[in-house]
Length: 382
Image (cartoon, rainbow, N blue to C red):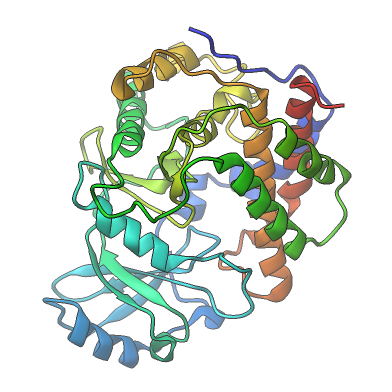
């Protein structure tokens, strides 16, 4: 099996990346403690309880108040709320208020794909309604069921046994394979994106959004913007891609090693499955302590599969002979992550960031770009 994954080998950007990306959530408390659960709704993201209650009585079958609203701690982009009632709990996702980048915060697209995938074996929450009338809460929103289960924020799963860790990783692998095998045309998503040229379109999109959110000049980011479009591997395979498939964007069964709901579909579109898969498996190509990197970690002792084992399981489930990775995919994903974090930095500047940890994301932009450029150089960039 050809993996084709290039590795870091002692670049100066490693220390920079460690210091910027570890941050408070690792040094003072765990990610599980930082991002799990709910809090009181932030003042700048408050929504009208009475208006929402009236809307749900008309549009959510079986809804009965009174309604209590909390805000989930996790999430940077689209504010997400827990809606509590005496008989059932719900989740509301909305566009944030204020000035927004074009095509960002597409909760309407999230609603469309989650609803469509409800007809498949891909684990998603049940959706109830989509509200495009901004007079109700100030921005568009949708409501879905609150799936009861476990959200795991630390990919090293410190509270689990080696056997349990292996089972969790296998469950993630299975859920992603199900998504990439879904017949998007059969469930009404043929128009959910364009077929082919995915990397060209994504690089163009994140370049535009990065420039629109730019808060400082980062030379290596500009180099990536110039180099990536001219070095795309030739392959136009098309599937549904999640866009941010990672362990904390899914809910696991309360006791079983099974994904029961994949969350945060804002970046989902029709695209190349290797963009999704290489992003999801990027940790195997980064050093320990760097954005959940696994190089230097005794994975066998932890019960976490090796990169080769994980790729083999994915290939078996998707009917592939092999996965051809490469430094390009790593450079692309780090560039895209830098672009996403720069968007958060821009929203922090504009006062619309949805998380108290937005400053950490802003600080990550430069080291992510620098790490991406190191992989680009491994792929031949000058």
